[in-house]
Amino acid sequence: MNNRSHWTLALLSVTITTSGCGAAPEESVEASTESALVMNSSAYYDGGSTTTVGGVTLHACPPDGPNTVGVMVGAHLAADIFRCQSVPFSQFAPGSAFLDGPDSPSHSISTVAGHPNLHRCPGGVMIGYDHNRNDLLCMKTAPGVITVNVTDNGTQDGFMHVCANLHDVTGNTAMTGIDAVSNVFLCSNT
Image 1 (cartoon, one colour):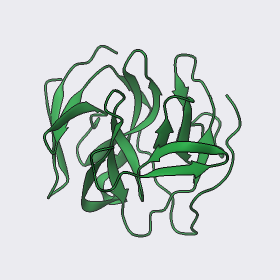
Image 2 (cartoon, rainbow, N blue to C red):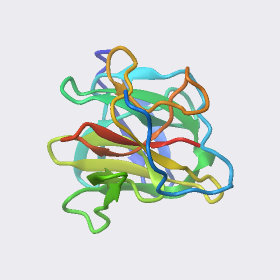
Image 3 (tube, one colour):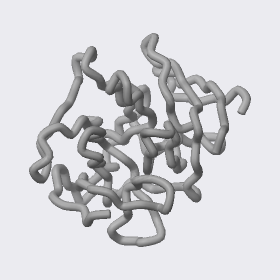
Image 4 (cartoon, rainbow, N blue to C red):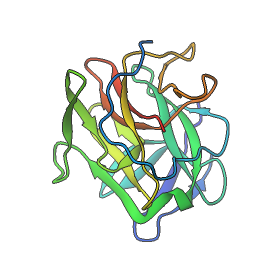
């Protein structure tokens, strides 16, 4: 849980290398009959691994194996600890990592199910977050891999707020957005 490492995300080739080491969901925002985002492994906690993208260093989920991307499935914001899960590279569009924050042109705030301040990754999932800067590190899903976004007002895993899987009560789904002030997550239930 106290894993501190820095890893690199190459934006052009979307390769990742490591060095060192509630309430019911509500309303749908996006939907498709395409294939769902596939989670590879059991979830794991990360206590502060970082990556630098566009000159911004932020906490991000490291991959837990080759040819995978670590995605956020939960967060304990006060402790700066994420719950992560690996997803195969093939689920993401090549070169699709991007920052979405107040200083970026893609800054995306949505109103979903009565929550007016949901900061979300348009067309993708969260792989990192900087609470102080309100920056999301996002990866766009590959064509044909679509998520159904729903709000989660506080599902807990016993330690932190997580995105619950509506179809498998033992599993999690990827975070696609957050309203940290209201403790509301936008989750990719597929």
